[in-house]
Amino acid sequence: MMRYNYMVIARAAQPRVQELLAGFPAVALLGPRQSGKTTLAQALADALPERAIYLDLELPSDRAKLSDAELYLSTHEDRLVILDEIQRAPGLFQVLRGVIDQRRRKGIRVGEFLLLGSASMDLLRQSAESLAGRIAYLELTPFVLPEVQRLGADAADRLWVRGGFPDSYLAANDMSSFTWRIAFIQTYLERDIPALGPRVPAETLHRFWRMLAHNQGQLLNAARLAAGLGVSGQTIARYLDILVDLLLVRRLQPWTANLAKRLVRSPKVFVRDSGLVHALLVLTDHEQLLGHPVAGSSWEGFVIENLVAAAPAGASAWFYRTAAGAEIDLLLDLGPRRLWAVEVKRSLNPRPGKGFHLACEDVEATHRFVVYPGTERYRLDPSTEAVPLSSLLRDISG
Image 1 (cartoon, rainbow, N blue to C red):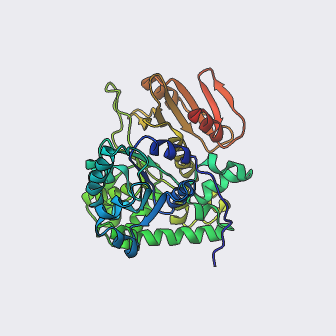
Image 2: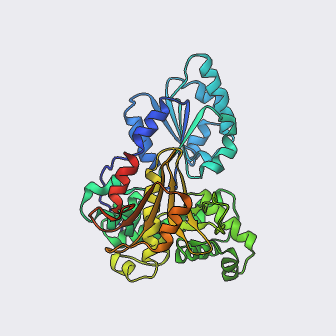
Image 3: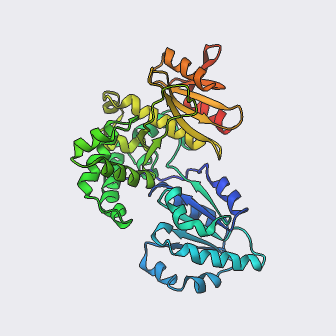
């Protein structure tokens, strides 16, 4: 029987959701299943006594209430309506447009609908085009380091090993956490993915997901993956699209602005949650992880996910690699004259290679950082700093 250390952990996204609800009629809060969207929505609802209605579109009883959605919603003009698993009812978007426009004519303009979804913004936008100008989007990731740091000195390592899904991170012990993640993966394969339409054999997709974990942070080699699964390259692309759309895998695209160089054109692929990487590879605790070849690339993905989550709205994330070997693990474009080059080293003596400095000159990076698992921040040379992840996260969100 699994046990959990339940506690309330404040989510960094909550003030941003409140800010968006103050400016838009509808806000879509997106993230993978079990990342904490419903808990956050309920926290927002608790701050609005008598004003919020919560409907879970996976429940037949709640879907029945929306059999005449326009009529139902028109009777709750003074309420914040929370619609969970909105991707299950794409036809609602057209209704929402009419309801929102009708309310606008009455002078009701903001904070009417909070939509929770387990699909990517790009996928959801295909259904939500009718709400252009009326809806804002925000992604809620599983826990990130600033949210759990106060829980103890081992918070960062625990987050890396277990990942950020709340039930995994807060499990009573490593084995309970591992068991939860195995069940989570199985549920996605057997129920959630088929419910969204893609007809993919669960065992085949499981093998593909596991192959991505083995190749964490590597350039996408569709031909090699296809050969390993006995399918076509087009099928590999479809499988990858499914996991990207479900916010479980990240395709980190290469920086291609420097046309004078021979640049790598393939994306790097990461299973986004480090705990899922370890579950897919059957690594149950910290000691097993440190002895596995994936440790370095797993930590790289962990650092990248935390930094991308902390980056301000409008920021872009890339990597850079040339055919000659110049490379930057993560390029963060944070706006005018703020191009951060980040190298990730799982070492207490982090020393970037010559290729990192050549790459920084190629892209004209304004800041150079080497993220490492230590606790001190210091200069490696006049232009490059070694920084703990927690320190760089404060910089980026400051």
